[in-house]
Amino acid sequence: MAAKQFTPDEWEKIREELEKNPGKYGFPERVYGSTVIGSFNIRKLGAARNRNAETWDFLAHICKQFDLLAVQEIMDDLSGFQKLMEMLGPEFGMIVSDKTGVFPGDTGLGERLGFIFRWSVVKRAEVVSDITYDRSKVLELLRKNIDDINLALATYNEKMEDYEAGRRKTKPVIHMPAFLSFIRQPYCVSFQIVGHPGTTPYQFMAVNAHLHFGAYMSDRKQELNALLEWIIARVKEVGKAYYPNFILLGDLNLDFDDPETDREGIEDYLKMFDNNAGEQVNVNFPFLDPHPQDGLQRTNARLTETFDQIGLFFREKGLPTYLDNEHMGDHPQGPDFRVFNFANLFSKALLGKEYGNLTKAEKDALVKRFEHKVSDHMPLWLRLPLPGK
Image (tube, rainbow, N blue to C red; front, side, top):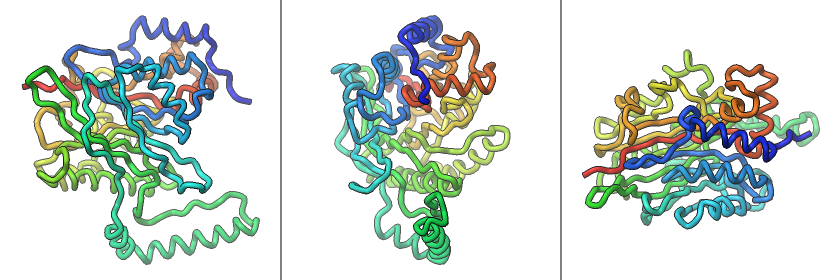
């Protein structure tokens, strides 16, 4: 039986609690002289009829706070995304990819990747593209890993034969020993963030990604590795990339459930790319560091993982490096980074307790009521000072 959605009375309690202290929950408030960039995996954002009016109001209220927002899990049916844009009004524009993740006509859950942006602050430039590995690169990877790939295919074929013959209940998942292609092609769009008259805008390629979530952590790391390699290689092509800076926004499905043991390993993994990039490229993933006021932040609704990330890859001055992360939030105009923790908001408004103080049964019951209709991911954001002279 499906969990009951929040009632209009419950939504009123949620609105009242948020209005009391939006900063407590990491709500991305509008601050003069700053711009807010973010990412939000809105679970199965498909047909408009699949969410009630109050849920749409809440989602629109969130999206309206951003100048540039990358959205994942937009379904092939665009009516929900279009409804959201209608609610935001003419102040906002959007651009969305075609469906990726499944071949047209085949069974499977494909999705689109999109951006919402505020016209007065963000200008979309000419370049829009998927990110792929070309045929020559794929052939090179095949050649280097052919023995391991053949072994994996042989094991997979045996399991498929059992499945097709009825000797196995579940369809097998192949454990690929090497990266060949993305499960969903990341979506790359060129943007400018303009400041006050006479200032030089931030110019960057925004990469929207929803990477592989599978049974094997090695598969996830292969995709992350490939995407970071592609971005850094492009940033290093001085004078060739359309814009010299890249911002990665999205659900990377990065394993981050135990900060005491995982954080150092993940940082070392990312620093490997930083070192390979050389001094001309700065790499900064703020959400891998504790926020000076909030500590380590979670982005999934159950507050157990930081799957979603914002990554900066740049050579120009003006954007925060990892050395700036410990000073995030020192100035109202930024830089700063937070997660809008609506799981804690819902808990406080409806149960009178912080989410962390709920029993497991209470957490499960609460999350079931919003993880499908609001989302099972929470929005994360990065505030930057508007470009200066």
